[in-house]
Image (cartoon, rainbow, N blue to C red; front, side):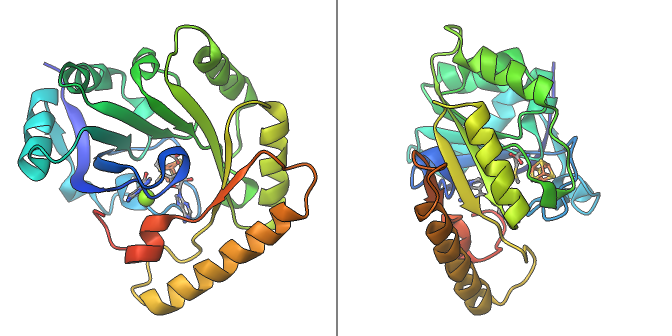
Length: 242
Ligand SMILES: C[S@@+](CC[C@H](N)C(=O)[O-])C[C@H]1O[C@@H](n2cnc3c(N)ncnc32)[C@H](O)[C@@H]1O
Ligand SMILES: Nc1nc2[nH]cc(C(=O)O)c2c(=O)[nH]1
Ligand code: SF4
Ligand SMILES: [Mg+2]
């Protein structure tokens, strides 16, 4: 059997980001990432600090845990990480969840392709801007977007760029120009993904949200775009498992 490295399973909560923001959902967060973004808010999935939390789980076991946490109070599961697209054998989990009529959302950065991605209902690709320290492989990203725009894929896709700096904003424009027609989101960057001072954090994030809205509002290159905060961070700060 094929086990999946699971970092955390939580919910029901709401999807705090992107194309289905507000959607009631469970989360399965896998361990391991091929990137190491400077500002990653889930760095415990790849920097060794969460090593003790990793469980190697069978798809059926993950489903049991989702049910024991969520009971009958969910019909939607978001798979995030880390980068879940590193795992070929997530196929088994997708199968179990689909057999149980669960709608599936995936969060990934667009650096790897897996065949099971065609069975996701809401797929977010989040290429990384310069402030992350990562370099986007456009050949790879073109290939992935191409596959997701083909008739093999019946779900919905979106592109989501997190913005911290003016350079990041330029990167967001480039991505939107490169893939016109793909629903496009810009998201406020959280510069302090460890603080527990929620008052200060939330005030600063709201300020940044307003600044990003102003920037987009006065930009004729970014018209068909949605500007969002991380709703879960505005509600619960950097708390894990929400
Ligand atoms: C933790 S990542 C996991 C999935 C995948 N590795 C990715 O980056 O798309 C989930 C989402 O959180 C975003 N994110 C990570 N750190 C962030 C931060 N400090 N501020 C805002 N968004 C952040 C990522 O850009 C991504 O869209
Ligand atoms: N509520 C909530 N929404 C989220 N959307 C994307 C998340 C992620 O870490 O991938 C996330 C998360 O961790 N919590
Ligand atoms: S790609 Fe995602 S999980 Fe990986 S380091 Fe960047 S933000 Fe974190
Ligand atoms: Mg998160």
